[in-house]
Image (cartoon, rainbow, N blue to C red):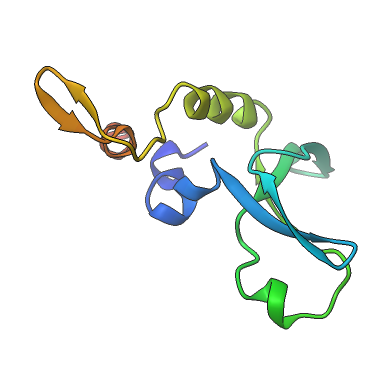
Length: 117
């Protein structure tokens, strides 16, 4: 898994909160990382799939009873992202650390931008 790539822009950070899907013609909000399933790809291996926020205008412009975007990652990704999300690493609310105000998402982004360098 390329962690730096996963946190390279705000779109990827949003997958760790909520996402919109369409179910039985209703547009509903679900928790990102939810509805996980394992899918086997011959020659690649087993990947875990989970809801992510990617339908955008497609949910309003395409006539289909059920739609959802799923992100594929290697097994274990959901547990790691869930731990980071629940621990507050993706929060946009400022906190004070050693007299300085920072947003945890900015801190997390900076740390991951250094991965592989």
